Amino acid sequence: MNVILLPLLSVFYNIPIHTSNLYPSSSVLWQPQQTKATQLVSKHKMIGLDKRLAPLLAVAIFVLCGCYSTERLSDQNLAFIYDKKATVLNPEFRVTHQNDSVSLLNFRIASSELLYLQNSASGFYSAEFRLRYEVYSQLESRIVVDSTVVLFQDSVLALTNRYIEGTLRFKPSKYATALLKLDLVDLKRNTRSRKYIGIDRTNANCRQFFNVTEAKENVPFYKDYLAKDEQIQISHTSGVNQAKVLYYSRDFPLPKPPFSTEGPAPFNYQPDSVFVISLDVPVSFPLVGMYHIQVNDSTRDGLTLYRFREGFPRVVEVDDLIAPLRYINSNQEFKKLTSADFPKAEVDRFWLALAGNPDRARILIEKYYSRVQDANSYFSSFTEGWRSDRGMVYLIFGPPNTLYKNSSSEQWTYGEPGNPTSVTFVFVRVNNPFTDNDYRLERSQLYKDNWFRAVDMWRQGRIYLDN
Image (cartoon, rainbow, N blue to C red; front, side):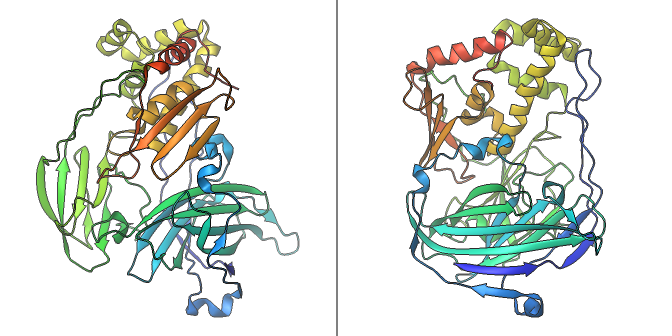
């Protein structure tokens, strides 16, 4: 295990953070909560053990490779990874492989999520956080292949909303695929965020051999989706200057209910168009759909970027309010919503009829559409997250009480494990060249009663297992 104490170097740059209301206009039932606008973003470039930073570092290093964790990750309850209430920290991470011996871990965190305390003598506000990573061969393993702990301190004279960004170098494991466990702790507030990232070095087409940056600021691009006019810059670690893009325009249907035995239609891999782009230059993808980027034809793997509707992953348009209601609408109700002359007013009437009064309607609306947005953040891949199998269950049942995850599946339990009234869903990972975030529900007729019971609770103005 490496322990590194690292003060931050600050370089400031401006990036507007776009905010918008949950709903596009005023409503007879509710007013959306306003999001505080971010005005300034700060970049703190941090490179672990970089010789250029040597005068600034107090370094203590302990190498403990091949040590054991007390419990397999696959035996731990990981329900917090899909629960926004579990932590106030929401760091973003991205792994890029530079070559066979060096990989980069890029990360950023909003300063507003950290606790800054003022020094009365100097007047400076300071925050401290610790980032620890552990490399495992897989979720089922207890052997820690490599680990490092890095301590950071950020000191400023004035508090502003900004991003703190950094880059750490690490040696990839000897395995072609591995797992990166990431723990970020706010040391002043004692709050924690834990995330897991798969490492894939199977072949040169794998997405982690592509480096994607924001074209204007030349900083890492952390998302897998783009806005219509958003420009990025793509490069490949091989140094090639061109890549082939396979464009897919697909309209995927909503998933069947958990008790349906009807399987999904097989995917048609024939692209709608194929074109070539130059690398290391700004590029944008204006059409809605999937853009699968490859440097050779040896495998189906590649870097896939998505263009969803405008505003994604947020709920911003009337259509965004109507479509997710299909899970709790009758056929007649949904037809009425989609054909209404004034669809927003019809949505109001629908929720008011379920809730019985405006105050309760506001609670239901906030809960339901918050789940839509959270599902988009957690489960999106080739389709919006709320339209996936996991998204469907998440909207109706909410975050699971217990979640066990291994290399091939996720098991969600609502209620106490072992209780006969509990319900457990199993999602199996799909081998998908476009994404590693595609999981398919193992459907069963046994889910029928639980599904209708949960849907009926929504229709009675209540929320399933709401605490």
